[in-house]
Length: 495
Image 1 (cartoon, helix red, strand yellow):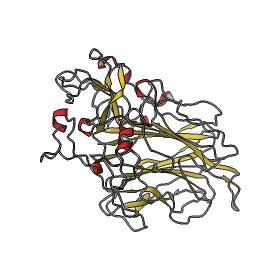
Image 2 (cartoon, helix red, strand yellow; image 1 turned 30 degrees about the vertical axis):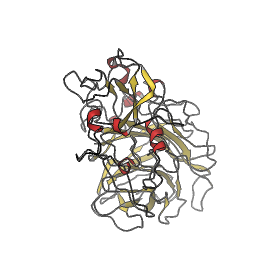
Image 3 (tube, one colour; image 1 turned 135 degrees about the vertical axis):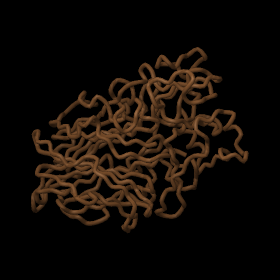
Image 4 (cartoon, one colour; image 1 turned 45 degrees about the horizontal axis):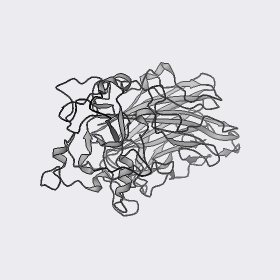
């Protein structure tokens, strides 16, 4: 059951599950379902003796943000140091508390069914080895593991590939994360470094991830886009919009809307504005705004509509980033912008990966008013940084991501997935516009799960929530663009 499994209960391979849960994505390891951990997310930077999460599996270590941890190399290693030795060939399979499976029927265009694995939270070996009994936690099903991952963006396309669902005109184009073919974009899953080098989002690709970029010259026109997945009740759709000068407004009623995969109406959605339209007049004027919608009970969703509502006429460059966030076991909380720095502006650059800004300090997950605790308050904190420009660039010569830009190293390169791209090479339309690649972007995704140290041995009873180099503060990270651009960072919490 790799992360990118499409959810259909067909052709499910144990070997794929082993590759995703193991330290070798080529061959896999011998992973037994009976020893899989289902873990709560850490809550504080220190969990002392007498409290914490139960474990009888022996000493272990997790700093991957992926689906596995590692056993300590010997009984004397101490997790409190933040740098325990690990045995790479003996993984600890993990499923975090926020993780849900997404099985679906075999029908074309069918929607996922959000499912929680039947294994108990923090199950000791003695409990899980009793599979086959009549207890509620017995008889683990492969369907409960279809599409699992620590990532928050689904990869089950559900025969609803990204694209325009209406005809807004005015040079409106839809792109994958790496942009137009020939535009020089990249899409990278980082393996990290050191104790993180086995972190993986096995099977995730530019084609199957539910992330879409739209570039348009339209103004005050509704643009409807297919989501590259089908979202079920509790999933969230996020739309971040950035445009050139003038003034951007918010509709008084529902700044975005949801539709079924075939275009039918949807009821019961929770729709909100997490970032009101605002302008940065440094260098070239830009506006940006952020909206979200949580899918309601009124049917599945395959499309979202947005309107770059503006004071100016047509042919004002606008770029929108659209993504889906999977429901966890609890409710999703609307996006929180990173430390209030909602509209940082940069001039074009020609070198430098990665980029950061100390003004951010860290993502919004670190404490704040949403959830307490330095590790996300028993929830997963999904952090995303979007560096983007709606403007045209003659050359698509911007920072490219590669696996050598390792993630979660504690040295300021903090991402699990990264991509960059540009739109098609366009010409001026009859009413205006610009020559060049229409819009640019560089995006990083940090699927923060909270670090874990099983520090007291097989008969111990604690998990240490973070220490030493593990208790770091990740900052928004991005690659440079070669035209004026803005940086937007936000966090969504999954319980």
